[in-house]
Length: 361
Ligand SMILES: CC(=O)SCCNC(=O)CCNC(=O)[C@H](O)C(C)(C)COP(=O)(O)OP(=O)(O)OC[C@H]1O[C@@H](n2cnc3c(N)ncnc32)[C@H](O)[C@@H]1OP(=O)(O)O
Ligand SMILES: CC(=O)C(=O)O
Ligand SMILES: [Mg+2]
Image 1 (tube, rainbow, N blue to C red):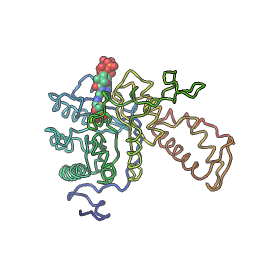
Image 2: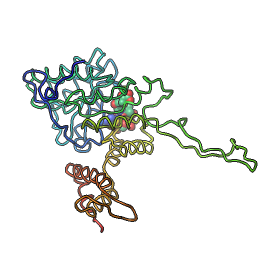
Image 3: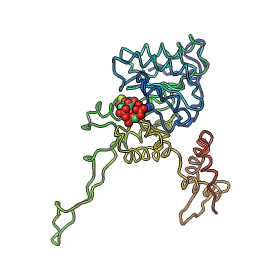
Image 4: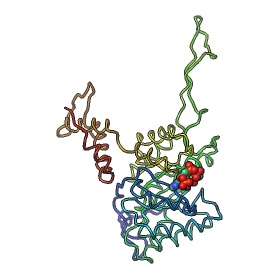
């Protein structure tokens, strides 16, 4: 197998294409809000959402009817050309690489709105070869269109082979911005016996051991606590490790039970705690949930700042509220403090909230 030299990653893949980035910027992306550009009612709401959400994503793939694929592509071009997105990023999800639409998606979008597109999400990525294909094609199209900044690639992890190859996918190109979990297609591809778009399942559980009677016999019919387990823990953890290794960003994905805002918040928070930087929003009501969950809480920032202040030069150990803090807990606190600072730069309300926190001794 031939490998590129390390330096090859910093050369464009087409003469005249922009130089690849050496670091992926840590731009806030708590919610990636999906809209169907062929749905006129939905599309009309998009300009008014700028500044209320970190990322707006024009979706061309699943959830767009086959008859509307061209209208969605053209609708996205129209919206992007007519709109100043200000602080909000513009992403798209193109059709799958084996579909009849994807080539036209790329050859239309890059020349028409390539300067405005921050990230292209590629669905059903199976391995590095899929990223290499998009990488080279983007370079050719960028060069031809005179695009000045490289368009980044985000892969959806939604096939068993994609999960098995997650490391090579993350490292396949300097364009790789991040990964999202695609729980619906992944469940189907793995032949999981679920019927949902993300979230939990009441059947996936662990039950408390049965109590025993005086003779030591198990009382299996007794009332016992059950603990629902997280179907996605393994994949999200694997994704987070692969992204952290490669300096790119992991995201949860869709939560299809739009009405269940409580379980949605739980699922998002599990992903936040495990290391994800954001999630998807399918409906306007999920944006506020994502923004809340993926912004560190006042309590966490208050505690983190206390640890930072108490740790001085960052070495040694101190006791705070009966707990030992040292270099390693300080590093965790610094992750939260850095995230809060980054979010405060783009979110004035959050800045006020974080500025008002008093650091106690
Ligand atoms: C597994 C995967 O691939 S997940 C990713 C693909 N799926 C998607 O992208 C789905 C995107 N979301 C949607 O299509 C819709 O939100 C649906 C189908 C889930 C629900 O749509 P509706 O039944 O119309 O929702 P609802 O009636 O609550 O909508 C309320 C308002 O919000 C608007 N709205 C709904 N979703 C969105 C959205 N994603 N963006 C902007 N506006 C929206 C509706 O147009 C409606 O406007 P109105 O008040 O002026 O009539
Ligand atoms: C996110 C997505 O596309 C899926 O769950 O299949
Ligand atoms: Mg999918």
